[in-house]
Image (cartoon, rainbow, N blue to C red; front, side, top):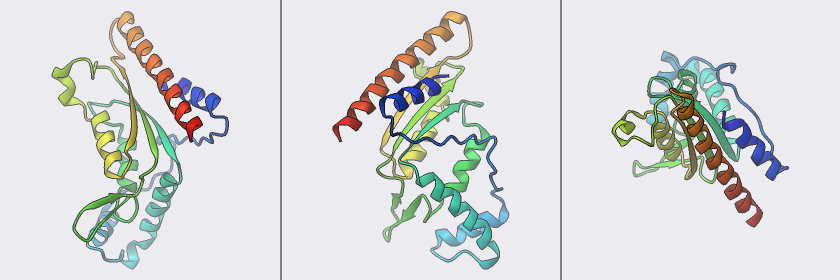
Length: 197
């Protein structure tokens, strides 16, 4: 997959880079259930979370704080049925709440709390999204992630497509080669930017 050599390239170019890997299929994610949803209504109204739901929300806040503790994220995301793997959607649902990754202002606007960070999305899909405009309306993977990251305040978003990953060997090889070239270019761009700071 492209994300492993991309990360290796970034680490080689920026030796001080500290990395933590989170496998969402191995992570201990709490349920986002009725109690959590009821507590969210309080947050949306600007009210405190009820005492009987406070422990669940403290855990959600800890997960959101951990997410925001990073300067950036490299997300390796396969497309599942035109969208995200359910564990990634679950994780996003756990951390996307007012006062955690965004806040509402007095005029009803939204301010993302993840501003100033960088996100790299490596989006893999069997279908050749990005190369066939007729199917791009079915992309609820990369389009969703860009929208969500923008909502929580991230403006420095880089996306690499690995598409299509199904079909004749020549098609897959071409998709991988294109993505590898784009990954190398991105490493060079981010390295140059880091050196200029």
